[in-house]
Amino acid sequence: METRSMGQYIEDAEKALLHTYNRYQIVLDKGEGVYLYDMEGKKYLDFCAGIAVFALGYHNERYNNALKAQIDKLIHTSNYYYNVPAITAAEKLKKISGMDRVFFTNSGAEAVEGAIKAARKYAYLKDGRKDHEIIAMEHSFHGRTMGALSVTGNPKYREAFEPMIGNIRFAQMNDFGSVLANVTERTCGIILETVQGEGGILPAEEEFLQKIAALCREKDILLILDEIQCGMGRTGSMFAWQRYGLKPDIMACAKALGCGVPVGAFLLTEKVGANSLTSGDHGTTYGGNPLAAAAINIVLDLFEENHIIDNVKETGAYLEEKLEELAAEYDCIKERRGIGLMQGLVFGRPVGDIIAKALQRGLILINAGTEIIRFVPPLVIGKEHVDEMLAILRSCLDEA
Image (cartoon, rainbow, N blue to C red; front, side, top):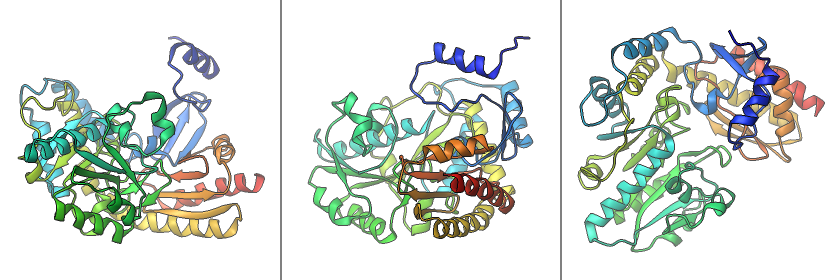
């Protein structure tokens, strides 16, 4: 068996992989529960969860066995044919969301791409125009593909790849007047993250979202909610928008939907599903294949059986309380933001050194922008893991 040191693997990776990530200098090897281990056996408490992906923690036996069983049975057929796991997964997603139609993708960015196409096709079928506009939010993040990037409200991600798809307007999150000022007769959709992730762990205010929903109903504009990071239980509701007592016309989800297997989806109401994309308008080779759908099915089963939402409510409230205490204790922390197990601490300076110190001490954290530490752990964490995280973070803050 080949033996290379962790340092050698990192050196070799830099020769072989396209350098689009500034990776931390560890090679992760395995996981157990809410902990990860590198090649040298060092243990890390994981408060990143693969960027809000691994909701069920690592090495969940039921999850692993369900995927193994599907691999032994059938992995892929293409969407020229039906497969039972995909049908079952669509039915389960309809049940937990109250939406009516499902299209499976391979990622969150692809889900956003499909949502944009559905909104434009819906508007096109109404009036035949080809100049419809979409309103997105400043500081939003929807993905790296050209369509998703076009509605991402951060110029630094877009400028090297312009021109974008066009006819996109940007408004300010939680400023309804800003949204209203951008509405024209050509507006076909308004897209936003129910809780902004990369943009700073910023939830939509209830009044703001309710006003947008009412505006969309009045003018037959489609409300598109991106739940890729904030969905799948992370805020204490299966989808964050369910906290607000409304429903989008289109929803994008991914990340924890497959808990590690690359899968996403966009969901539509019957009104939009019946009056937008049709045969030949959209497709995917891998989306909704039996293996990906099997992952969705076991994830949704385990969410229900293990009362994941209840744990998020309880542990999320504890995490929120302890982060508030931390923010009051340290002058360098300006604010706590977030809902449930999607939290952020806003600092008055870059946080890269704090995250690096934490990693050295066995704690995995990530940022959301240069001055915010993001906390998106597996949804199975307990209060004892919050306490363990806080002890390490405090030691880093004291040193900094």
